[in-house]
Length: 234
Image (cartoon, rainbow, N blue to C red; front, side, top):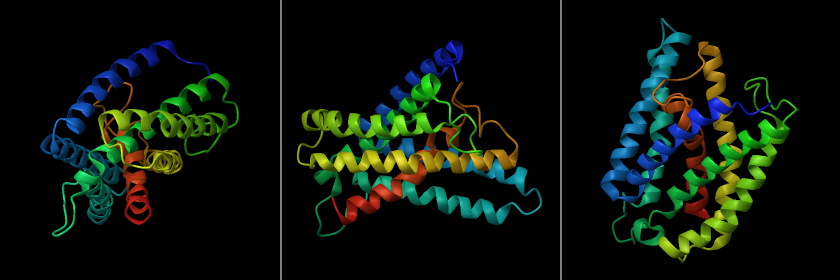
């Protein structure tokens, strides 16, 4: 699978704007973080309902409500990791983790997706899944390996300089590994949903990238597993 230059240019420009907006929401303060993921939450749910209506035109309400739970749960967990829900009598997670864990999750997903696309475009030959024909084993494995190594070795240097210097370095290796595995699973889950609904993208808010679900499908599946890891082991 060769790299399509025009597609890459479109995706890169859109991704640059997307990254700027994401970083502003993530880093400005807790209210910008809350506002960002409120928009993400309702954007994802709106697109999910639209897909469900295509699949179950007569009986869409129950799946739509289940989808609301599915989308709300990881968003709430992400807010919890940001420290927006401190527990009475306990130190705020914002103090313990600053904003480092949510950023590590998102960076891991971005690195995994980007490297899987590039490696797959350059050397990918073996189809990974019938659900997503463009994915290859070479791209998936290459993206995961680069993600774990890059995030595990490089992100701690950034975190120690700008965010929280007290998080053990091995934590980032685990977060990157979780993102590589469950981020790919989330992407396949959304691809299956789109295939059943017979649509190419969940939305069209970002040229070259699709809609909210297209961009945050991996985050919705990855976050609960990172949350469980952080709560129990980090």
